[in-house]
Amino acid sequence: MGTPIKIVIIEDDDTIRNGYEFLINANNGFKVVNTYSSFDIAQHTITADRPDVILLDIQLPGTGGIAALPKLKRILPSTLILIITVYESEQVIFDALMNGASGYLTKSTPSVKIIEAIREVCEGGGPMSVNIARMVISSFRRNQDSPLSKRETQILELIASGKSRSMVAKELFIDLETVRSHIKKIYIKLDVNSRSEAITAAKKNKFI
Amino acid sequence: MGTPIKIVIIEDDDTIRNGYEFLINANNGFKVVNTYSSFDIAQHTITADRPDVILLDIQLPGTGGIAALPKLKRILPSTLILIITVYESEQVIFDALMNGASGYLTKSTPSVKIIEAIREVCEGGGPMSVNIARMVISSFRRNQDSPLSKRETQILELIASGKSRSMVAKELFIDLETVRSHIKKIYIKLDVNSRSEAITAAKKNKFI
DNA sequence: TAAAAATCACCCCGACTGGGGGATACGCAG
DNA sequence: CTGCGTATCCCCCAGTCGGGGTGATTTTTA
Image 1 (cartoon, chains in turn red, purple, green, orange):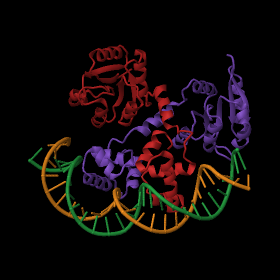
Image 2 (cartoon, rainbow over the protein chains, first blue to last red):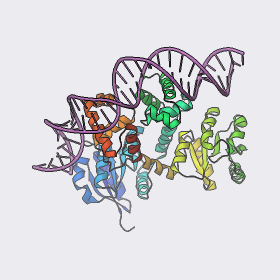
Image 3 (cartoon, each protein chain N blue to C red):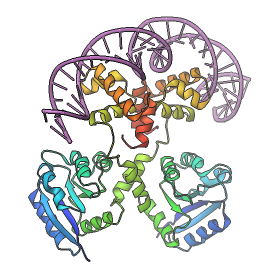
Image 4 (cartoon, helix red, strand yellow):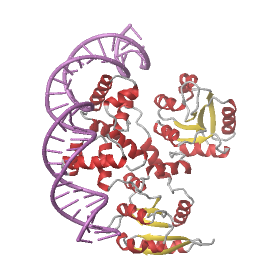
Protein backbone atom coordinates (compact mmCIF):
# COMPACT_ATOMS: atom_id res chain seq x y z
CA MET A 1 0.00 0.00 0.00
CA GLY A 2 2.24 2.79 -1.28
CA THR A 3 0.32 6.05 -1.22
CA PRO A 4 -2.82 6.06 0.87
CA ILE A 5 -6.09 7.31 -0.61
CA LYS A 6 -6.45 10.95 0.43
CA ILE A 7 -9.82 11.91 1.84
CA VAL A 8 -11.39 15.22 2.80
CA ILE A 9 -14.53 15.43 4.91
CA ILE A 10 -16.95 18.36 4.66
CA GLU A 11 -19.53 17.99 7.39
CA ASP A 12 -20.84 20.50 9.91
CA ASP A 13 -21.65 18.08 12.73
CA ASP A 14 -18.51 17.78 14.85
CA THR A 15 -19.37 14.37 16.21
CA ILE A 16 -19.93 12.84 12.82
CA ARG A 17 -16.95 14.57 11.26
CA ASN A 18 -14.55 13.44 13.95
CA GLY A 19 -16.10 10.01 14.03
CA TYR A 20 -15.61 9.50 10.32
CA GLU A 21 -12.08 10.85 10.49
CA PHE A 22 -11.15 8.47 13.27
CA LEU A 23 -12.76 5.52 11.55
CA ILE A 24 -11.07 6.15 8.23
CA ASN A 25 -7.64 6.86 9.67
CA ALA A 26 -7.84 3.58 11.56
CA ASN A 27 -7.56 1.84 8.19
CA ASN A 28 -4.30 1.44 6.38
CA GLY A 29 -4.47 2.75 2.88
CA PHE A 30 -6.85 5.57 3.76
CA LYS A 31 -5.90 8.94 5.18
CA VAL A 32 -8.08 11.91 6.06
CA VAL A 33 -5.94 14.82 4.95
CA ASN A 34 -8.31 17.56 6.06
CA THR A 35 -11.81 18.25 7.36
CA TYR A 36 -14.08 21.26 7.05
CA SER A 37 -17.34 22.28 8.64
CA SER A 38 -18.70 23.96 5.51
CA PHE A 39 -18.07 24.26 1.80
CA ASP A 40 -17.61 27.99 2.10
CA ILE A 41 -14.60 27.42 4.34
CA ALA A 42 -13.34 24.48 2.32
CA GLN A 43 -13.38 25.99 -1.14
CA HIS A 44 -10.27 28.14 -0.77
CA THR A 45 -7.85 25.56 0.51
CA ILE A 46 -9.29 22.24 -0.59
CA THR A 47 -7.34 22.22 -3.86
CA ALA A 48 -4.13 22.18 -1.83
CA ASP A 49 -5.35 19.04 -0.06
CA ARG A 50 -5.46 17.25 -3.42
CA PRO A 51 -8.01 14.73 -2.16
CA ASP A 52 -8.85 11.56 -4.04
CA VAL A 53 -12.24 11.37 -2.40
CA ILE A 54 -14.46 13.94 -0.71
CA LEU A 55 -17.16 13.01 1.77
CA LEU A 56 -19.71 15.80 1.46
CA ASP A 57 -22.64 16.41 3.72
CA ILE A 58 -25.84 17.49 2.00
CA GLN A 59 -27.20 19.47 4.93
CA LEU A 60 -24.50 22.11 5.12
CA PRO A 61 -24.81 25.65 6.46
CA GLY A 62 -24.21 28.29 3.80
CA THR A 63 -23.68 26.69 0.42
CA GLY A 64 -25.60 23.41 0.59
CA GLY A 65 -24.15 20.12 -0.54
CA ILE A 66 -26.06 19.98 -3.81
CA ALA A 67 -24.93 23.47 -4.72
CA ALA A 68 -21.37 22.68 -3.66
CA LEU A 69 -21.15 19.62 -5.91
CA PRO A 70 -20.69 21.36 -9.26
CA LYS A 71 -18.27 23.83 -7.72
CA LEU A 72 -16.15 21.05 -6.27
CA LYS A 73 -16.26 19.20 -9.55
CA ARG A 74 -15.01 22.29 -11.31
CA ILE A 75 -12.04 22.93 -9.07
CA LEU A 76 -11.25 19.23 -8.56
CA PRO A 77 -12.48 17.50 -11.70
CA SER A 78 -10.99 14.09 -11.03
CA THR A 79 -11.92 13.89 -7.38
CA LEU A 80 -14.68 11.47 -6.49
CA ILE A 81 -17.42 12.69 -4.23
CA LEU A 82 -19.53 10.68 -1.84
CA ILE A 83 -22.62 12.30 -0.41
CA ILE A 84 -23.47 11.97 3.26
CA THR A 85 -27.17 12.33 3.86
CA VAL A 86 -29.86 11.56 6.36
CA TYR A 87 -32.51 11.95 3.72
CA GLU A 88 -32.85 8.83 1.68
CA SER A 89 -35.36 10.48 -0.59
CA GLU A 90 -35.24 9.62 -4.24
CA GLN A 91 -35.12 13.26 -5.22
CA VAL A 92 -32.17 14.26 -3.07
CA ILE A 93 -30.07 11.32 -4.19
CA PHE A 94 -30.93 11.74 -7.85
CA ASP A 95 -30.07 15.41 -7.61
CA ALA A 96 -26.74 14.50 -6.09
CA LEU A 97 -25.98 11.95 -8.78
CA MET A 98 -26.97 14.42 -11.47
CA ASN A 99 -24.67 17.02 -10.03
CA GLY A 100 -21.61 14.86 -10.05
CA ALA A 101 -21.72 12.68 -6.96
CA SER A 102 -20.42 9.16 -7.39
CA GLY A 103 -22.43 7.61 -4.63
CA TYR A 104 -23.80 8.19 -1.18
CA LEU A 105 -23.52 7.18 2.43
CA THR A 106 -26.24 7.43 5.01
CA LYS A 107 -25.41 8.72 8.46
CA SER A 108 -26.56 5.33 9.67
CA THR A 109 -24.19 3.52 7.32
CA PRO A 110 -22.34 0.93 9.43
CA SER A 111 -18.75 1.91 10.05
CA VAL A 112 -17.29 -1.01 8.17
CA LYS A 113 -19.37 -0.14 5.13
CA ILE A 114 -17.83 3.31 4.84
CA ILE A 115 -14.39 2.04 3.98
CA GLU A 116 -15.96 -0.44 1.62
CA ALA A 117 -17.82 2.32 -0.18
CA ILE A 118 -14.72 4.46 -0.54
CA ARG A 119 -12.76 1.55 -1.89
CA GLU A 120 -15.52 0.72 -4.35
CA VAL A 121 -15.78 4.22 -5.65
CA CYS A 122 -12.02 4.40 -6.16
CA GLU A 123 -12.10 1.22 -8.15
CA GLY A 124 -14.21 2.88 -10.75
CA GLY A 125 -17.68 1.91 -9.77
CA GLY A 126 -20.17 3.87 -7.81
CA PRO A 127 -21.45 2.58 -4.52
CA MET A 128 -25.03 2.30 -5.55
CA SER A 129 -26.68 0.54 -2.72
CA VAL A 130 -29.41 -1.93 -3.38
CA ASN A 131 -31.82 0.79 -2.33
CA ILE A 132 -30.66 3.14 -5.05
CA ALA A 133 -30.79 0.37 -7.58
CA ARG A 134 -34.40 -0.22 -6.67
CA MET A 135 -35.23 3.44 -6.87
CA VAL A 136 -33.66 3.63 -10.28
CA ILE A 137 -35.48 0.59 -11.54
CA SER A 138 -38.79 1.79 -10.29
CA SER A 139 -38.15 5.23 -11.68
CA PHE A 140 -37.50 3.69 -15.05
CA ARG A 141 -40.41 1.37 -15.01
CA ARG A 142 -43.37 2.61 -16.91
CA ASN A 143 -46.83 2.36 -15.47
CA GLN A 144 -48.48 -0.68 -16.97
CA ASP A 145 -52.07 0.45 -16.79
CA SER A 146 -51.86 3.68 -18.67
CA PRO A 147 -55.16 4.91 -20.05
CA LEU A 148 -53.34 5.96 -23.19
CA SER A 149 -53.22 3.80 -26.28
CA LYS A 150 -49.88 2.85 -27.80
CA ARG A 151 -50.20 5.51 -30.45
CA GLU A 152 -51.22 8.14 -27.98
CA THR A 153 -48.28 7.31 -25.75
CA GLN A 154 -45.96 7.52 -28.70
CA ILE A 155 -47.33 10.91 -29.69
CA LEU A 156 -47.20 12.24 -26.15
CA GLU A 157 -43.57 11.19 -25.95
CA LEU A 158 -42.76 13.18 -29.04
CA ILE A 159 -44.71 16.15 -27.71
CA ALA A 160 -42.84 15.82 -24.44
CA SER A 161 -39.53 15.98 -26.25
CA GLY A 162 -40.49 19.38 -27.55
CA LYS A 163 -41.76 18.37 -30.97
CA SER A 164 -44.56 20.40 -32.50
CA ARG A 165 -47.67 18.84 -33.95
CA SER A 166 -46.41 19.15 -37.49
CA MET A 167 -43.07 17.60 -36.56
CA VAL A 168 -44.86 14.70 -34.96
CA ALA A 169 -46.96 14.32 -38.08
CA LYS A 170 -43.88 14.18 -40.30
CA GLU A 171 -42.10 11.78 -38.00
CA LEU A 172 -44.97 9.32 -37.85
CA PHE A 173 -46.00 9.74 -41.48
CA ILE A 174 -49.52 10.70 -40.52
CA ASP A 175 -51.58 13.78 -41.17
CA LEU A 176 -51.29 16.89 -39.06
CA GLU A 177 -54.96 16.58 -38.25
CA THR A 178 -54.56 13.05 -37.07
CA VAL A 179 -52.00 14.23 -34.58
CA ARG A 180 -54.51 16.82 -33.44
CA SER A 181 -57.16 14.22 -32.85
CA HIS A 182 -54.81 12.09 -30.84
CA ILE A 183 -53.71 15.02 -28.75
CA LYS A 184 -57.30 15.99 -28.10
CA LYS A 185 -58.04 12.49 -26.87
CA ILE A 186 -54.93 12.52 -24.73
CA TYR A 187 -56.08 15.76 -23.12
CA ILE A 188 -59.49 14.31 -22.41
CA LYS A 189 -58.07 11.13 -20.93
CA LEU A 190 -55.62 12.95 -18.73
CA ASP A 191 -58.17 15.63 -17.91
CA VAL A 192 -55.93 18.49 -18.93
CA ASN A 193 -56.01 21.15 -21.59
CA SER A 194 -52.49 22.06 -22.53
CA ARG A 195 -49.26 20.37 -23.56
CA SER A 196 -47.39 21.09 -20.41
CA GLU A 197 -50.19 19.91 -18.17
CA ALA A 198 -50.39 16.72 -20.18
CA ILE A 199 -46.65 16.16 -19.96
CA THR A 200 -46.60 16.85 -16.24
CA ALA A 201 -49.54 14.56 -15.57
CA ALA A 202 -48.16 11.79 -17.75
CA LYS A 203 -44.70 11.95 -16.21
CA LYS A 204 -46.13 11.97 -12.73
CA ASN A 205 -48.02 8.76 -13.44
CA LYS A 206 -45.19 7.29 -15.50
CA PHE A 207 -47.35 6.96 -18.59
CA ILE A 208 -44.38 8.18 -20.54
CA MET B 1 -38.60 -24.56 1.88
CA GLY B 2 -42.34 -25.03 1.43
CA THR B 3 -43.33 -24.13 -2.08
CA PRO B 4 -40.52 -23.72 -4.56
CA ILE B 5 -40.25 -20.56 -6.67
CA LYS B 6 -41.87 -21.33 -10.02
CA ILE B 7 -39.89 -20.32 -13.06
CA VAL B 8 -40.68 -20.24 -16.77
CA ILE B 9 -37.98 -19.87 -19.40
CA ILE B 10 -38.65 -18.30 -22.79
CA GLU B 11 -35.56 -18.74 -24.93
CA ASP B 12 -35.16 -19.97 -28.47
CA ASP B 13 -31.71 -21.49 -28.16
CA ASP B 14 -32.19 -25.11 -27.10
CA THR B 15 -28.80 -25.40 -25.49
CA ILE B 16 -29.21 -22.35 -23.33
CA ARG B 17 -32.80 -23.16 -22.47
CA ASN B 18 -32.03 -26.68 -21.36
CA GLY B 19 -28.89 -25.60 -19.63
CA TYR B 20 -30.74 -23.01 -17.54
CA GLU B 21 -33.51 -25.47 -16.77
CA PHE B 22 -31.06 -28.06 -15.55
CA LEU B 23 -29.11 -25.55 -13.51
CA ILE B 24 -32.16 -24.13 -11.82
CA ASN B 25 -33.81 -27.44 -11.08
CA ALA B 26 -30.62 -28.59 -9.43
CA ASN B 27 -31.36 -26.08 -6.68
CA ASN B 28 -33.83 -26.74 -3.96
CA GLY B 29 -36.42 -24.03 -3.71
CA PHE B 30 -36.45 -23.36 -7.44
CA LYS B 31 -38.45 -25.23 -10.03
CA VAL B 32 -38.72 -24.66 -13.76
CA VAL B 33 -42.39 -25.38 -14.40
CA ASN B 34 -42.25 -24.85 -18.15
CA THR B 35 -40.08 -23.68 -21.03
CA TYR B 36 -40.92 -22.15 -24.39
CA SER B 37 -38.95 -21.34 -27.50
CA SER B 38 -40.87 -18.17 -28.28
CA PHE B 39 -43.30 -15.72 -26.76
CA ASP B 40 -45.84 -16.46 -29.45
CA ILE B 41 -46.01 -20.06 -28.30
CA ALA B 42 -45.85 -19.16 -24.62
CA GLN B 43 -48.57 -16.55 -24.45
CA HIS B 44 -51.51 -18.95 -24.59
CA THR B 45 -50.54 -21.33 -21.84
CA ILE B 46 -48.15 -19.37 -19.67
CA THR B 47 -50.91 -18.12 -17.40
CA ALA B 48 -51.64 -21.71 -16.44
CA ASP B 49 -48.01 -22.13 -15.37
CA ARG B 50 -48.51 -19.37 -12.80
CA PRO B 51 -44.80 -18.57 -12.71
CA ASP B 52 -43.22 -16.40 -10.04
CA VAL B 53 -40.35 -15.48 -12.31
CA ILE B 54 -39.92 -15.53 -16.08
CA LEU B 55 -36.53 -15.65 -17.75
CA LEU B 56 -37.07 -13.94 -21.08
CA ASP B 57 -34.67 -13.84 -23.98
CA ILE B 58 -34.46 -10.53 -25.80
CA GLN B 59 -33.49 -12.02 -29.14
CA LEU B 60 -36.61 -14.05 -29.79
CA PRO B 61 -38.05 -15.07 -33.14
CA GLY B 62 -41.48 -13.60 -33.79
CA THR B 63 -42.45 -11.23 -31.03
CA GLY B 64 -39.16 -9.93 -29.64
CA GLY B 65 -38.43 -9.82 -25.96
CA ILE B 66 -38.92 -6.07 -25.59
CA ALA B 67 -42.31 -6.29 -27.28
CA ALA B 68 -43.24 -9.31 -25.22
CA LEU B 69 -42.53 -7.58 -21.92
CA PRO B 70 -45.64 -5.40 -21.70
CA LYS B 71 -47.80 -8.27 -22.88
CA LEU B 72 -46.44 -10.58 -20.22
CA LYS B 73 -46.86 -7.88 -17.61
CA ARG B 74 -50.47 -7.51 -18.60
CA ILE B 75 -51.41 -11.16 -18.41
CA LEU B 76 -49.18 -11.85 -15.39
CA PRO B 77 -48.97 -8.57 -13.50
CA SER B 78 -47.24 -9.84 -10.41
CA THR B 79 -44.72 -12.03 -12.14
CA LEU B 80 -41.14 -10.83 -12.10
CA ILE B 81 -39.25 -10.87 -15.35
CA LEU B 82 -35.54 -11.24 -15.85
CA ILE B 83 -34.12 -10.44 -19.25
CA ILE B 84 -31.55 -12.71 -20.87
CA THR B 85 -29.42 -10.81 -23.34
CA VAL B 86 -26.11 -10.98 -25.14
CA TYR B 87 -26.22 -7.26 -25.82
CA GLU B 88 -25.06 -5.33 -22.83
CA SER B 89 -25.89 -2.07 -24.53
CA GLU B 90 -27.27 0.70 -22.40
CA GLN B 91 -30.22 1.20 -24.71
CA VAL B 92 -31.42 -2.39 -24.75
CA ILE B 93 -31.25 -2.74 -20.99
CA PHE B 94 -32.90 0.61 -20.32
CA ASP B 95 -35.66 -0.32 -22.75
CA ALA B 96 -36.16 -3.56 -20.91
CA LEU B 97 -36.30 -1.87 -17.52
CA MET B 98 -38.73 0.70 -18.84
CA ASN B 99 -40.97 -2.01 -20.19
CA GLY B 100 -41.30 -3.85 -16.95
CA ALA B 101 -38.23 -6.02 -16.56
CA SER B 102 -36.91 -6.33 -13.03
CA GLY B 103 -33.35 -7.08 -14.00
CA TYR B 104 -31.18 -8.88 -16.46
CA LEU B 105 -28.83 -11.77 -16.97
CA THR B 106 -26.16 -12.03 -19.59
CA LYS B 107 -25.68 -15.27 -21.45
CA SER B 108 -22.24 -15.30 -19.95
CA THR B 109 -23.58 -14.90 -16.42
CA PRO B 110 -21.85 -17.56 -14.29
CA SER B 111 -24.16 -20.39 -13.37
CA VAL B 112 -24.05 -19.69 -9.68
CA LYS B 113 -25.02 -16.08 -10.26
CA ILE B 114 -28.26 -17.05 -11.95
CA ILE B 115 -29.81 -18.52 -8.84
CA GLU B 116 -28.53 -15.56 -6.89
CA ALA B 117 -30.20 -13.15 -9.28
CA ILE B 118 -33.51 -14.97 -9.13
CA ARG B 119 -33.41 -15.01 -5.36
CA GLU B 120 -32.59 -11.32 -5.25
CA VAL B 121 -35.39 -10.37 -7.55
CA CYS B 122 -37.87 -12.37 -5.49
CA GLU B 123 -36.77 -10.60 -2.36
CA GLY B 124 -38.01 -7.34 -3.76
CA GLY B 125 -34.91 -5.86 -5.25
CA GLY B 126 -33.74 -5.92 -8.79
CA PRO B 127 -30.51 -7.56 -9.77
CA MET B 128 -28.76 -4.49 -11.06
CA SER B 129 -25.24 -5.50 -11.73
CA VAL B 130 -22.40 -3.14 -11.03
CA ASN B 131 -22.30 -2.48 -14.75
CA ILE B 132 -25.88 -1.26 -14.85
CA ALA B 133 -25.31 0.84 -11.79
CA ARG B 134 -22.43 2.54 -13.56
CA MET B 135 -24.47 3.10 -16.67
CA VAL B 136 -27.22 4.64 -14.62
CA ILE B 137 -24.87 6.89 -12.73
CA SER B 138 -23.19 8.10 -15.86
CA SER B 139 -26.52 8.57 -17.54
CA PHE B 140 -27.67 10.69 -14.64
CA ARG B 141 -24.55 12.69 -14.34
CA ARG B 142 -24.84 16.11 -15.86
CA ASN B 143 -22.10 17.43 -18.07
CA GLN B 144 -19.97 19.76 -16.01
CA ASP B 145 -18.84 22.05 -18.78
CA SER B 146 -22.12 23.17 -20.19
CA PRO B 147 -21.94 26.38 -22.17
CA LEU B 148 -25.26 27.39 -20.65
CA SER B 149 -25.49 29.68 -17.66
CA LYS B 150 -27.37 28.58 -14.58
CA ARG B 151 -30.40 30.60 -15.52
CA GLU B 152 -30.35 29.37 -19.08
CA THR B 153 -30.15 25.79 -17.91
CA GLN B 154 -33.06 26.38 -15.59
CA ILE B 155 -35.15 27.88 -18.35
CA LEU B 156 -34.25 25.16 -20.81
CA GLU B 157 -35.34 22.58 -18.25
CA LEU B 158 -38.72 24.23 -17.94
CA ILE B 159 -39.03 24.46 -21.70
CA ALA B 160 -38.07 20.81 -21.92
CA SER B 161 -40.87 19.90 -19.56
CA GLY B 162 -43.33 21.39 -21.98
CA LYS B 163 -43.77 24.79 -20.38
CA SER B 164 -44.56 27.73 -22.60
CA ARG B 165 -42.71 31.02 -22.46
CA SER B 166 -45.39 32.69 -20.44
CA MET B 167 -45.51 29.80 -18.00
CA VAL B 168 -41.77 29.98 -17.53
CA ALA B 169 -42.04 33.70 -16.95
CA LYS B 170 -44.69 33.21 -14.27
CA GLU B 171 -42.77 30.40 -12.63
CA LEU B 172 -39.53 32.32 -12.37
CA PHE B 173 -41.15 35.67 -11.60
CA ILE B 174 -39.50 37.33 -14.55
CA ASP B 175 -40.87 39.10 -17.56
CA LEU B 176 -42.06 37.27 -20.64
CA GLU B 177 -39.56 39.20 -22.70
CA THR B 178 -36.73 38.16 -20.46
CA VAL B 179 -37.59 34.56 -21.06
CA ARG B 180 -37.46 35.24 -24.77
CA SER B 181 -34.02 36.77 -24.48
CA HIS B 182 -32.71 33.78 -22.59
CA ILE B 183 -34.17 31.35 -25.05
CA LYS B 184 -32.62 33.20 -27.91
CA LYS B 185 -29.22 33.05 -26.23
CA ILE B 186 -29.69 29.35 -25.57
CA TYR B 187 -30.40 28.76 -29.23
CA ILE B 188 -27.30 30.64 -30.25
CA LYS B 189 -25.11 28.73 -27.80
CA LEU B 190 -26.46 25.37 -28.84
CA ASP B 191 -26.49 26.36 -32.49
CA VAL B 192 -30.13 25.44 -33.01
CA ASN B 193 -33.26 27.32 -33.84
CA SER B 194 -36.20 25.58 -32.26
CA ARG B 195 -37.29 24.22 -28.89
CA SER B 196 -37.12 20.61 -29.87
CA GLU B 197 -33.68 20.93 -31.40
CA ALA B 198 -32.47 22.70 -28.29
CA ILE B 199 -33.93 20.02 -26.06
CA THR B 200 -32.47 17.23 -28.16
CA ALA B 201 -29.05 18.84 -28.29
CA ALA B 202 -29.02 19.63 -24.59
CA LYS B 203 -30.11 16.15 -23.60
CA LYS B 204 -27.57 14.56 -25.89
CA ASN B 205 -24.80 16.52 -24.23
CA LYS B 206 -26.35 16.16 -20.79
CA PHE B 207 -26.62 19.89 -20.32
CA ILE B 208 -30.01 19.25 -18.82
C1' DT C 1 -12.42 46.87 -13.25
C1' DA C 2 -13.95 44.42 -17.12
C1' DA C 3 -16.56 40.64 -18.81
C1' DA C 4 -20.48 37.82 -18.50
C1' DA C 5 -24.99 36.97 -17.09
C1' DA C 6 -29.60 38.42 -16.08
C1' DT C 7 -33.09 41.54 -16.60
C1' DC C 8 -36.49 44.25 -19.48
C1' DA C 9 -38.31 46.40 -23.84
C1' DC C 10 -40.08 47.02 -28.69
C1' DC C 11 -40.82 45.77 -33.74
C1' DC C 12 -42.76 42.22 -37.42
C1' DC C 13 -45.11 38.16 -39.07
C1' DG C 14 -45.70 33.43 -39.97
C1' DA C 15 -46.63 29.26 -37.59
C1' DC C 16 -48.61 26.93 -34.11
C1' DT C 17 -52.18 25.92 -30.49
C1' DG C 18 -56.48 24.70 -28.55
C1' DG C 19 -61.44 24.32 -28.82
C1' DG C 20 -65.45 23.43 -31.47
C1' DG C 21 -67.65 20.70 -34.99
C1' DG C 22 -67.66 16.21 -37.98
C1' DA C 23 -66.43 11.74 -40.92
C1' DT C 24 -64.57 7.05 -42.24
C1' DA C 25 -62.70 2.70 -41.36
C1' DC C 26 -61.05 -1.31 -38.65
C1' DG C 27 -61.00 -4.82 -35.21
C1' DC C 28 -62.59 -6.85 -31.18
C1' DA C 29 -65.83 -8.26 -27.53
C1' DG C 30 -70.28 -8.94 -25.83
C1' DC D 1 -74.30 -8.01 -35.22
C1' DT D 2 -73.62 -3.98 -32.91
C1' DG D 3 -71.43 -1.21 -30.07
C1' DC D 4 -66.78 0.59 -28.28
C1' DG D 5 -62.27 2.07 -28.77
C1' DT D 6 -58.66 3.16 -31.89
C1' DA D 7 -56.69 5.38 -35.76
C1' DT D 8 -57.16 8.06 -39.53
C1' DC D 9 -58.56 12.51 -41.84
C1' DC D 10 -61.14 17.15 -42.62
C1' DC D 11 -62.94 22.26 -41.63
C1' DC D 12 -63.18 26.87 -39.02
C1' DC D 13 -61.42 30.40 -35.93
C1' DA D 14 -59.38 33.33 -32.38
C1' DG D 15 -55.51 33.66 -29.79
C1' DT D 16 -50.83 32.69 -28.54
C1' DC D 17 -46.24 31.46 -29.44
C1' DG D 18 -41.91 31.34 -31.97
C1' DG D 19 -37.98 33.23 -34.20
C1' DG D 20 -35.38 37.26 -36.03
C1' DG D 21 -33.65 41.73 -35.18
C1' DT D 22 -31.84 45.55 -31.84
C1' DG D 23 -30.87 47.93 -27.71
C1' DA D 24 -30.50 49.02 -22.76
C1' DT D 25 -29.78 48.55 -17.51
C1' DT D 26 -28.31 46.15 -13.50
C1' DT D 27 -26.20 42.45 -11.02
C1' DT D 28 -22.85 38.95 -10.59
C1' DT D 29 -18.64 37.04 -11.31
C1' DA D 30 -13.97 36.50 -12.80
